[in-house]
Each structure stands twice: as structure tokens, then as C-alpha cells.
Length: 476
Image (cartoon, rainbow, N blue to C red; front, side):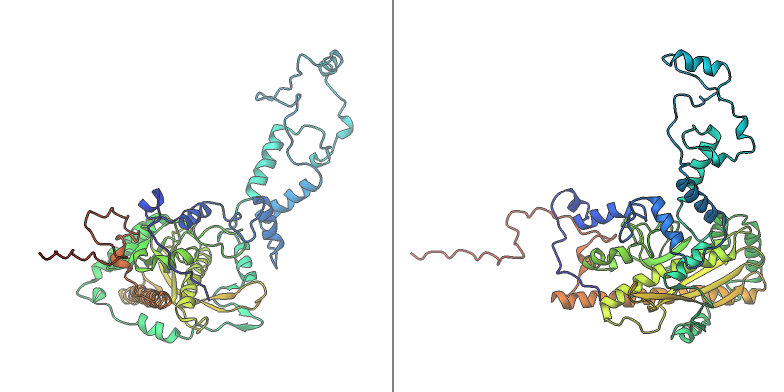
């Protein structure tokens, strides 16, 4: 259970109060701007050590270019071949070696005669040259590029990403744990029934055969991922009535999911709740789980995500990204539900993710993510599992399109209902703890910030003191 401290006055003094940002939120913003390897618990001293720890912690090391670069970097470090500072006799920008004027005459004469005899170094590998020799410009640039590349954080585009998630208790669809396949969520049949509900906007009178052909044309015209999200996905999305959404917003404010060696979440589309809907005290305590960014206008508590892929995109990468996004959302829902109901695991899923790949036939896939009891309680509190709930080929027939898009839009509405329920329960629980009703929407601005304190006018009553009684007139 997450403990919530007693509510404090949200009208802090100074410039932070006028902007509606408390000192704790200001510190959280500064912490969110730090790279993930610095926000790890405990933080890594350097990015190189974070990358080294990432590969050392993998249960199975795949043979990839990134793994080979890290292997070469370690071998060069052991052999003392790390790039050194430029010496006085190293090549200049034109590739020529110059000898300073203040050098000894013998050194200048030695250089004019061609330098040392290197005939005994024939067939010698470059790595066998002692570290005292100045490396050439090309080799130095190559080593620097190798070190820079090996220090990049791992993303879903690398095969090590999936192994890393599994090692930290984040299991994809169809994964067998200890020889047994993980079952779906307890409310899987309920969610599937909701998917099958008809949508009036997809009836024959509203979405005709011509509209379906126009969608196929937009899907064919989308040659890259941004165009996929702009053209065909906009038709799938429909109208955003009462749902706050965002896109391409790095989740830099969230606590790192594993050990700080993965990239930050950055879904192509996600739905969340307005921050004004959540009590300020809850936002302050659970902000690193439910507020993806420090921008007040961005949605909070996201639990619906979509990843799009163009014709040259990979469906496998999209599934990895959807699994990663879903776990970030399921963790936030789990934290808020734990505070609201003290019910840690009920077997249900409250987070939906989806992928749309325009290549081939335009495939839409929908998944559900949920927390499960940890298989290693000593190292982590819980594990997560992602399960596929359905797949549709949207460019096949109009009927197939309507079924898939109806499931997508119904899933969005259902995810919003789950957000509203858990937020209302958390606000009610906080009101019980503080002993008063939560009236936050009336005391804050539209974007969730507290109203700045205004000066009390002369004669205006104070809420903390009784109203002054009128003076009695003396008799006589």
C-alpha cells in the first residue's frame, strides 16, 4: 500500500505558488530531466557502467552488433587501447606530422630521416601496437564512435530488449513461465463482450463502402510511421469525445521500470485523464507512477496506448513497444488501485494497448496488460503480463474493418471508465483519511493547477476566524 501524508497547504509562497507548482513538484521536475541511468535506484555513476550492467544482467546474451561493440569496448579497455590525448607529434588536420620548434635537434634530424624503422611490425595487428604510440586520426574516431554507440540505451528495436524485460518479470503474449503458459486476465471474456458491441458510427448509413475504399487508399498512401498515424489511424480513432489524449510525449517523469538502462516510453498515441480529476495530494505522492510528464496539460494515468508502424516497420518491434507501454500504464493503475482499495491483485486487466501496421493488409492488434504476483519477491514487488485479445485485417472487407474499429473504439471507452472508477475511489479514500470531502475541481484551475492566493479585501471575512459581531449601542 502507498502511504499518503496529511494534506498540506497548496498555496506555497513565492514564484512557485503563483505558477501552481510546489517545491516537491519542482524537485520532481528536475529529477525527471535527468537521464534514466541517473534516476535508477541506486543511480549508476556513468552511462558506460549502466550499459555494462545491462549486458551483465541478461540471462541470455544475443549475438547482435550492439553486443559485439560492447565486447570490443571491454577488450580494448583491458588492453589499454582507450583513446588518449593528442601528443605533440600526432597528425594535424591535414594528416601531416609536425615537430615543435623547441624540440631537440636530434629529434628533428631523426624525423627528417624518416623516423623509426617499422619493418619488424609487418603483418602486425593494430591492436598489438603498444598504447604509448599515438593512435591515428581514423582509429581514434572509430574507437570514439564505438564507445558512443555502445553507450546508447536499449530500445524495442534491439533483440536484447525482450530478454531484458523477461529477466525483470515482464512477460509478453504467449510466454511460458516454468513450462506453463500464462493465462489471460480474469475479465477477458467481459472485455471481449465489450469489443463486440455495435457502434452507430460504423453502421451502413454512416460508414459506406466508399468510405471503406477511401480508408484503403489512405492506408496505401501512408509510406512512413508519421503518415500512418495521420491518415489511416485518424479514421480508426474517430472523434475524441470526452477523452483526453496525447502523442509523441516522452514519459520522462515516470520512475524507471527496470534498472535505468532502457529508453523512456514514448507511445505514438495514448489516452489519460485530466490532472484536475485527481486530487493534488495524490498527484504529488504518486506522480512518478501516474504523471508521465511535468507538463500540466498532458494527460495523467494513461491506460490506453497505440503504436503505429509503416510499410517498412516491424510488427515485432511494435509488439515490444506495446508491451512496454502497457506495463507502464498497468503499473500506474496498480499503484492508484492499491491506495484506493488495498486490493493488490484481483486477476483483472485495466490497461489496453494496441498496434496498427499498415504494411500488407493493415493489421490491428489489441492487448491487455495486468500485474501478477512476483516470481522473485526479493528483487521486485510484482510482475506483469501482456495478453493479446484480438486481431483484425482492416483492409480485407468492410465487415472486418467495422469489427476491428468497433473493438478499438469500445476499448477506448472501457479504458476511460476504468480510469474514472479508480480515480473516484482514490479521491474518496483520501477524503476519508483527511476527514473532509474532496472538492478539488472547484478549488483549482481547469488544467489542475491550484488557484493563486488573492489578497483579502478590507472587511472580507476569514474562513479560519469567526465573523466580527456588530458593536452594541450604549443606552442613554
